[in-house]
Image (tube, rainbow, N blue to C red):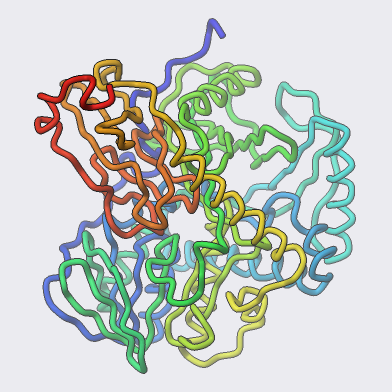
Length: 521
């Protein structure tokens, strides 16, 4: 479009801009605590907060910086409205299970609100209605079925025939009394409370394994040991799978967000489309300025190379319904989905009851992460929790999860075979500055990235998890694996698990003297 606004050159989430986030040193000596928490996002930090309030000694280990992973890249809707799920849950699992899921996420919303009020946290917490809308007759009918599901399990909602945007819709379903907030401001305050209560937080401390036992021990890449009565795996993808086969039970997807400055004020509410392509809308404030967050572009990780097109599509969508003055920032998120769309929260395996895991929040991590923290607390303190069986990772329903298990793993085999057979078409000289591509060196598939100064970085494109071939992601400048969602920087370092080891790196200067015939290019 002629008036399409220019995208920022590099991705940077709105949430981290202008917010003072505490910094922490790496772990430098062995440690023993009551609970070891791996992951410094909303799940790990909320867990640390509720546990230190119970008088427990906790240590949080973060591989990079706290609040810089999925939590820092969310749309931050605090809601039990998680797409078209309640009719599906009633059909597949029964009315009581669907109701429990709604209650668990509503309890989480109330916990966040109570915490904000109790500590007077300035995090832009604001009550909002959550709205699913349809632009097609097919999804209008699905919304009517979802509205009936709301009624069956007692959700406060209603069908409406219009929303306050310049678009024609067929139907919209409102879930009332939900909320939104600024996740980093909220959690930065919790971090200070954790410190005041004596909790430990360590950054740039990579957990690589667990020695199970009565007191499991987390081992770090630097050779340090942290022992506790419990280990909580809160690292998005579990840093330690044990025999839980989580790689085969989770699907990784990516989605995209742009923060747009619009001429007119945002009318309020949080919106998501039921039909495809998915679009999500909400407002957010940064440094006193209001922006509209436009999200969407959902696809399986590693299956799209030109992800800048996804950002551009959001940009165009924004132009269609708003008078956009500029695109302030852009970023993407990685989400994990379980086989049956209900997260895995609880014992890693039945044989390892003191190693707990929380993963597979789909796109709804603000409430499900809080559910996880409260469930972890109750398991550790041996309290009853009505949601324990609902979220148990040990569940394995024949329908629909068994079908999804075979579909997901058939895709892994497909990618594994196809990736090995692909013949690279580009050579190093053809790669533009600031871009990456797959090339061939001595008949072997390699990945090359050329930075702004023309320096070339070459890595092996075989993912270090199960050996699938990674693909270049131009929007994030990363190498992404389509099998289980591992992601690597252009230098080969791990950005997202389940891979633990970096891609093998090569020194381009060693290749400079290769002829085109020798090198395959």
